Length: 348
Ligand code: DAH
Image (cartoon, rainbow, N blue to C red):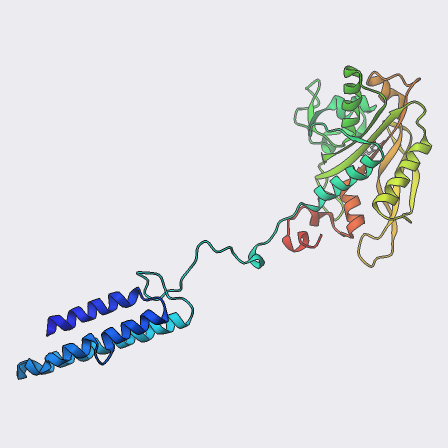
């Protein structure tokens, strides 16, 4: 009798564990706890038990009965909750590992605002006939300064204003992180002459530049510029101005307001600053914001690259991509572009 009760308990619990739907649960209940079930049948043997053993056997029978009843209730609740539990499980919910996750929990990434603006700019200038040229970020002073008409001793070459990699006082051609994308003007002209494919030359060059500036709302030690260079016969200031006007209308707005302000750069003559009427903060009154410099390529620069300034003339410009992005999307602080704060990045 004791053995029979013990095996009813073990088998009952084992079979219950693999029950995963209401029908087989009911079949299990009938088989073990029903009026003609195994427990009732075993109880029928009670009359043959010696009177002295009856209390002990009776207690075990009650214990087995209530344990099976409790296990049955627990199983019933688990099945009603939607998870039958897989074989061997004590009632944990059924998990289908092949089911796709919920879309709402998948955060989709996107390209950084600077990359997008860069590509948009390349696209706008591309429609005006500009190709894309690139150059290295690790440069030498010949391309960053010398050939851009910035001779030795010029204040722009001060070590305090540049990231030199070699000591400029002791190295003949010191390397540096480029401080402007104007370096790519030089490389493109040298290349065009060496390979014989130009001029005419018409390129834009987007890329990173580096300056040891103190970081604040409008400065960063690394930022992006887009350089433009157009060299052909008879290119004039009118072409420069109409190109920039066209760019402003195409990229910002049909009624964009622009102006050229006389300025100075060693590599252009005449030189100008290019400003646009922009509200940097949403709701702010628009004011003149400087996007960068421009001008007619200095004859010395053309000559340094082997291009005859008596035949060819050209214009150049160099704008800050962050400035353009901030103006276009109303971003008030340049640091927001580099902090990688998702709360900002998800909005732009
Ligand atoms: N390289 C200048 C700077 O970083 C910007 C610039 C001015 C580029 C005039 C030009 C230019 O091509 O013609 O401040």
